[in-house]
Image (cartoon, rainbow, N blue to C red; front, side, top):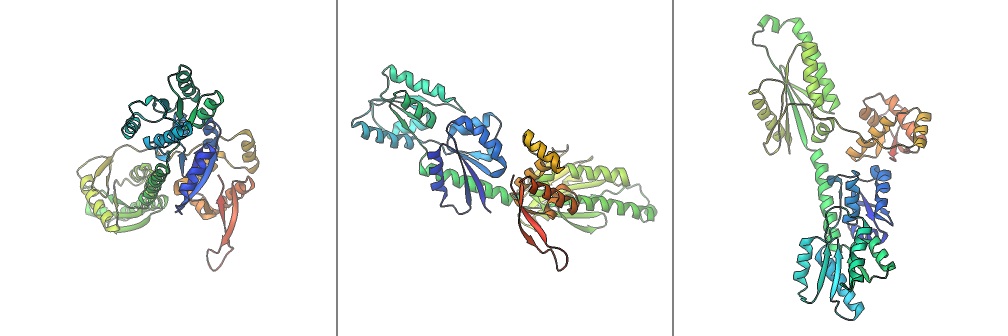
Length: 434
């Protein structure tokens, strides 16, 4: 599994990140350098579909992007500034000055790290003016903080974690030094990101079993139960269950009379949510008058998932009404009463030029946005018409038309062919370029 890591920050910070990331073979670093923090907005908007995770150079671009709602906590991170970063730069400054610097100003580093720094530097004569802050603070305010202290003769030098502040202070004649994340901080951050993404990937691959049971009516006579009418209704119910199994890409098995298991993965259930399962129960009751009991069991192995399905059935039989019980690998029982929200596709902000291309290609922007979102969810850029047909719940013929349109617009390119069987034409596979 290759991880596409989008590195965002000043050019020198990006180079440092690339050097530290080179030791990880499963990482593909996609660099995005900027001159000012505010350029982060455009970078993310134009390249969000190209990366699996955002690694920012520091606090400023991370919280700036978060404040605009461009990223969420689970899809981005940054290496923090530790007291050791400041210590290294302070020693460098002392060497350049040829003397002990009596007072300095510092920004961006947290209060806890500043306390750690003071414990590392037992210099009573060193006076430190700190500007710790949460979130994002415009560079102009940080510049004013350092400049005011310097021209009031309260400090001899300023230490900043932001490149634009460093350049502006140098321009205004304030002795300034740049504090950057250490190699160790970058390595630890990258390792955490890798573990987080690999964990998410394997979690999506976890076995999930959907158990479905027809609820018998105790008032029904034996004659009615074995009638042809009931058998026809039973077939209609199985057809509905089969459609649901197809929707979650599951393997459908009938265990006994009115008892079914659908083997799938946790990732597929999360993608579809529980809404189709409630829909199955409603349609069965509406079309066949046969109520269904539905449960879900997760597990690290198929046996564990089956045991959890049985446990979920026991819990479900204690409750009346349309409720879905889930038992996970830790034996924790969840009771789902209301339908969860369906997958929300990221509606990309297409400009007038793109809208004209969509119109010419006779394809809806919402379809492209849906494909962009699902390919990102599966971390899959190499696709065939069969994949697209499955994602869009359409025919392969329609999927080929969609892929041809994407190719014409430069959003996909042919990467090769595969032979689906002994007969028939080779099937092309494409690389999506969202």
